[in-house]
Image (cartoon, rainbow, N blue to C red):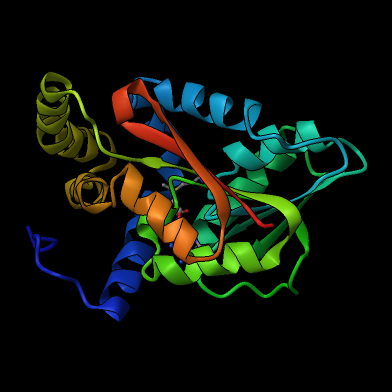
Length: 243
Ligand code: SAM
């Protein structure tokens, strides 16, 4: 595979990720359901239910793609709150916007093309910033974390839902086999795009484990950093506070 395990230079990674998501955008939701056997919906539901997001909050969703997090959050912030659904990729954002329109959920959701590494917002703008299955695709993750902290209001929370490290050996083995055989096969059959789904498996494997991501959040100036494993650590939820 041309994605390999070598270190990919920064500009190359950004271009690669752009290509992957443009190529999967149209089939992204179906593939998510297929590949996770629908479990991603439970992870997202848990993420939002325990997010502390409240009525009236101003929320920024980074790497928001087709908008699952933004739509769930928009119900929680209510009519006086606001959700800004952002993504770096126009194709993903277009589908996210269309889905929000289809579901009649645009009264409190706005949309913007935004690179998580460089947020075009003033300091202290949001009560919460979310990023779900997005951080591992970002090239400069330290920059993204620092930006999340910068745009939070004091007392606001950065919330990260991301693939993480499975700590149970038998589950790890099964999961590895699944990631590197079933995933690319599904990608080829359903999306005619095995490479994109191989990228997915490899990006999950390279992503920092729970403690390391927690340290990165602390380095970015976030406080009270905590994490919680879901499904044996296949996924983890990290949160950190801007003091
Ligand atoms: N949050 C959505 C969800 O949970 O279904 C979408 C997740 S999707 C796996 C990852 C998204 O990250 C893609 O839409 C991609 O375009 C976006 N992305 C990648 N790099 C980014 C960056 N630097 N800034 C913002 N978004 C980025």
